[in-house]
Length: 482
Image 1 (cartoon, rainbow, N blue to C red):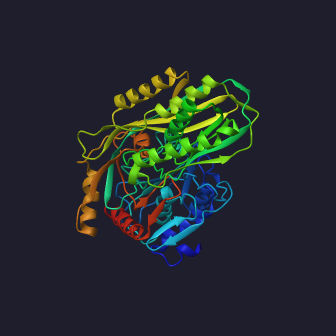
Image 2: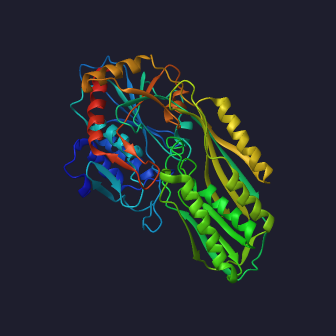
Image 3: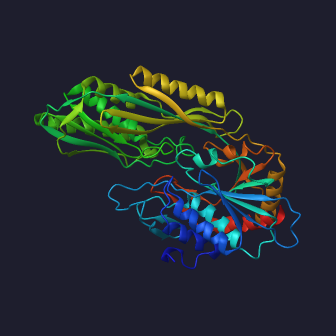
């Protein structure tokens, strides 16, 4: 076992988390972890089936005496966000996660940890393997490719599940019960650019780094910096003051992550180096002042780069920089019904330069479909005005909160019994698989809960060890009382 996990409670959960940390599981590359679960199910004599998308469903009979209880589903996703700090030597396709213990927290060494949703999956496996939980008949659903677009949930077939209750184990705040979530859509803008031979003699790499990043739904209201918007603004300032050429712009890592880092290779007369660095330093000061304590570690650096053969045509460069610097990022509307809940937002997520194509990916979220589509149209309009072609894809539904449902009542009773107080009911400004899968199973009652996970989707991700123990105790008692 990983040293950081030794002697932690509950052993039944950490045993499987240890195995998951050792199995690479980027989105769309879940075959190895799926096989681990299938082998476990087979060794326990349990039925398992895989659908065409690669989702896995396992069924376990009730504990003797609980056969007449309603069937319940435990669900989680197999993939993890693969983010690392620059300079961290880690290959997510081959290397195990290096788990580190820090007091009551577990984190990874320079990468995402995979507690999202590894702890939920590990808890499901612990239930699957258990012999001492007085549960009714159970189904377990392990989905693929949640992190890059809820693909597994979107392609999950109807008519497979038989459960009355849907327990999603992908919540990240101990003491809360999530009873609703937003829907989302991806808006992608592309521009075919003209490449011409570089004229300037010297090349520099301008890099934005040090930002917190985070989940583009859960953290969108935190006021954190967006590396792409900052880089776009810096490039605009340079283009306005000195003759530069732009060879490439790249940044961000995933559509559902607030971009922490971005860079551009620019060329200029070497005699303008001092002026270029002064302008970048001035921009850094301005952005650091603007962000304040929301993102105090921002750094914008200039370093020598290899001189590329080609650069973007001046018009293409200006339009791309202007679009990055001008696209909205952040909250568009707060919920009028749930205090503190973001209702509608947009995330400027990634920019890539591939040959003669610049691609910008954004995502919009809202609990209200009409608001989500309005936000997507707004982003698309701005992109088209900048000469980009636009397409929408990956749309998924939200999940309407039902605070008076039977599943909420039952889980609140258990929470009161175990912790002496009710859980806080919340809705998430993020896509949850409940909404996508649940749409195909009308009448299935859904709820989501889990341990405390901080900083998901970034190398700052960490899980609170003590909250995993509370989560496990709660899950067991819930299953015994459904």
